[in-house]
Length: 390
Image (cartoon, rainbow, N blue to C red; front, top):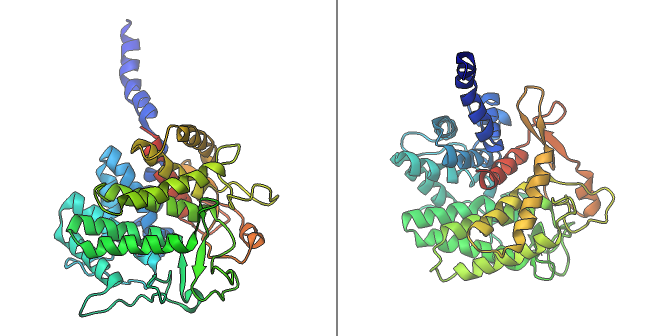
C-alpha cells in the first residue's frame, strides 16, 4: 500500500468509526448541551419541573450507554442549581409535574454516591406523601387520588399523565431505600388512576377523570374525559414500563401491573397508523384534521421495545416497534444551527372538552424559530433512541 494512502486511512478511520457509531441519542444529547447553557433551565425557565427533568432523564439513558461524563455533569449542574449541600430543594411545586425531577436525584445518588442526593430524594418523597410531623400539601380526591395540580382548574381531577410524573419516582425510591410506604403509595395511585380512566374495551386510557363529574369535559356518568390523547398514552406506557423494571417480579402486585401493561399494548397495537406511528387522537384515524404526533409515538416505541426486551410482549410487537422507529426517524431533520431537530409534536396541553379542541392544537417542532420551546419532542426522541439504537 502506498505510504500516502496509509496516511489518509490513519486520518480518516477515526472519523469513519465515529460516523458509524453516532446515533440520535448522542446527537440530540450533544446538541441540547451546546444549545442550553449553563443548565437546561434556560430552555424554558420552568424550574424544578418535569419540563426540564424529562429531557435530562432522556440524557440519563444516553449516559447509561456511553458513560460520557459530560452528560452526567450536565444533569448534575441542573440539580445542583436547586439542591443545596444538605439536600434541601428550593422552589418546589404542589403539582405532580414537579415531582418528576426526583428521578434525577436518584440517578445522581446511584452514580456519584453523594449523600445529599439521597437526602434530596427523601425530601421529595416526604413532600409528596407527608410525614407524621408535616402532612402533605398535595390535595386528594375523597378516594385518596392526588389532584394533578393544586388549583381550582384541577379540583378533584386526576390525569393519566400524573402516573408518570410521580409514581416511577416513588416506586424506585421505595425499592432503593427499602421504604414500603413509597412502594405501596406508587402502586395505589397507579391502580386507582387505572380503575378510573382505563377503558378495557378499547385497551386505552382517557386523558383525565373528575371525581365530581361536573367539569366541562367530564362525562356526567363516569367522570372521564372524552378522548384518548397520544402523549397521555405515551406517559402512561412509559410509567408502566419503568415501574415494571423497578418492581421485583416476586412482589404481590407485579402480575397486576404487568396485566395492565399488556392490555395497554393491545390498544396501542390496534391504533398504529399505516405509516407506523400514532395520531394526536390515536383512536380517531377518520378525522381529517388529525395528525401524526411524534412525542406520544416516541414514548410508545420506548415502552413497547422495553416490553420486548423483557419478554413482556410476544414477537408480533417486533413489527410494530420496527415500523414505528423507521417512520419516527423521518421526523428528525437538521435545524439551522446544523444540529438535529424533532418535528410534529403537540405542545404542552391540558384536558380538552372534545376532539375538535384537541385537534385545534397544532403540531410544532423543536428547536423552532416560530414557537416557544417545548420539551416533549426532545424527551420522546431520547427515550426511543435509548432502546432502538445500539
